[in-house]
Each structure stands twice: as structure tokens, then as C-alpha cells.
Image (cartoon, rainbow, N blue to C red):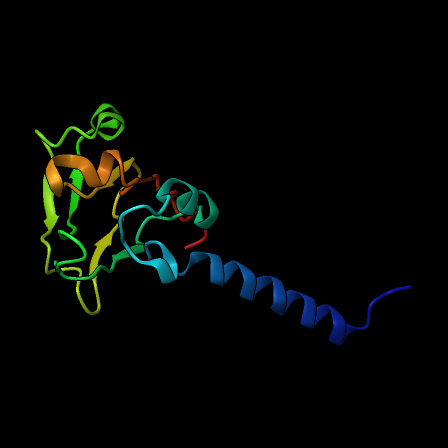
Amino acid sequence: MALSSNAQVFILLLAAASLLAVTEARTVVVGGSEGWRFGYNYTDWALQNSPFYINDQLVFKYDPPSEANSGYSVYQLPNLWSYITCDFSNAKLLASQMQGVGDGFKVELTRWSPYYFASGEKDGKNCKDGLMKLFAIPLPRWNK
């Protein structure tokens, strides 16, 4: 049974729309409704929200320092070993304790290479014990 020309056009439009949706950059809040906080597993979160693509934006939202928390930050770590060991000696501070408050701090994934992020507060305890680290390897967008 052959499809009518209207059905063929509809299927073609659906396919084109789905390809267009894949090529649009996303803005993704790290941790979703949990935000960037101590004790949340960002490795699992990243796996569930992958793939990321070049030009996607990650938004780090977190509470300001208070009696309940010592504060959070966002560092970009230089390599996998620094990420695994939570070594901040060559890391770059991207967002201070106050920059993730409100609308959060945005990081655009501009190149096809691994990005390693972590919170460096409490001498790295947020990274080591609090699981506050994630990596993303954005893929190129082929259909632009």
C-alpha cells in the first residue's frame, strides 16, 4: 500500500524537523532541578543527559555560602588525571562562590575536546567527597 502524497510530505517534514532539532544548541542546567551541590552524582547525571554538542551551554546554578554550606565554585581542570585526583594546582577558576547564584554561570562548549569541571571549595573536598565533578566531551554538529 503506497502512502499518499500528503503523508509523504508530512513524513518528510517530520524528518527535517527532527534533524533541525539536533543541530540547535542546547542550554542545560547541570544537575537539573538539583543544581550544583554537594553529594549529587554528576557523573551519572552527565551520562543521562549526554550527548553534548559543540556550542551547547552548561549552566551551573548553586546557592551562596551560608551556615548550611561552605559555598561552591566551578573550576575547569586541565586533564583527566587532575579530574580523577581532584588536583586543582593547574585548574582555572571559572565561577566564584557567588557567580552561580540566581541565573547561574554559563559555560559554552566551543570545541571538540574533553571538558573537566569541579568545585574546588573546602580544599577539594567538594570534588573528592561530594562528587562535585563532571566531564563533557561535546560532539560536532554535522547537519549545520
